Length: 272
Image (cartoon, rainbow, N blue to C red; front, side, top):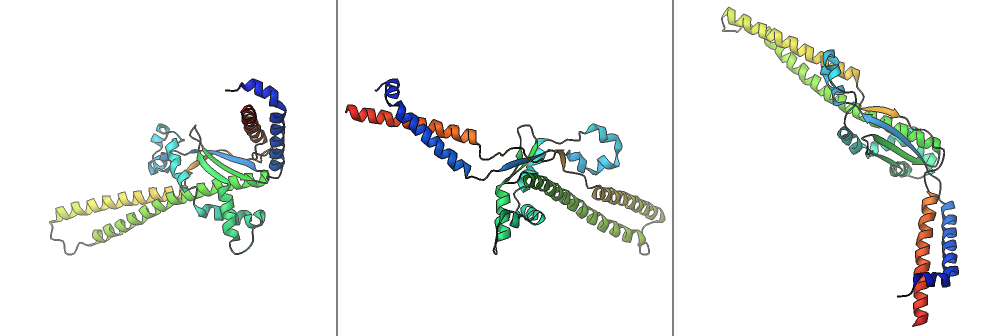
């Protein structure tokens, strides 16, 4: 086994030349890669109780629940963050077809895929929602990140409202049936006392259904937020990609190993 230090002293010029040449080529290559600026929106999940009608109707229990939800509440938001519909909205809202320079029949689709590939929505280790967008323009990156967050917020608010609307429709249908039963008394075979009790029970049910309909309607009108904005995206001061320091260090280290391996191979073959 040859002595590595001895080989390095003998072949150091070749090893250093390989490192300098490789690092120089990597620097030239990196200079042609377009800069990408990163903008990030930070948010927290709203509590599940925010979408509970009892929190709005009954103020006595409001202090029992926190305003912030758990990290598990973000799973459904992250799960819907890859829907093409969200990114088509960004394309049309910010005219990304022209911004990215696409043309042709599939220009809008290409722009949608590009902004989708340049975006990331996920949970941080601290349970925060991070909406990240990279773009060649720092201002456009910030605008896209804020817009993507707004679209996610709007999507999940709409989903909550649809559920409440469906509940209201079912309650109104049942309320109408009870009203019809309340007005039917001509063919009753019950005694006057039992009939009065039945009518009273129907009246109480009608009052309960009216209250439920009003509560759910209030939830629809309130339209509570699903996400709580912590920090909006701002234009970055410096580019996030490419990372020159990391890339050049990796190239230098790899070229150093390659040069050393080449020197060992040459020294071994010369001795043989």
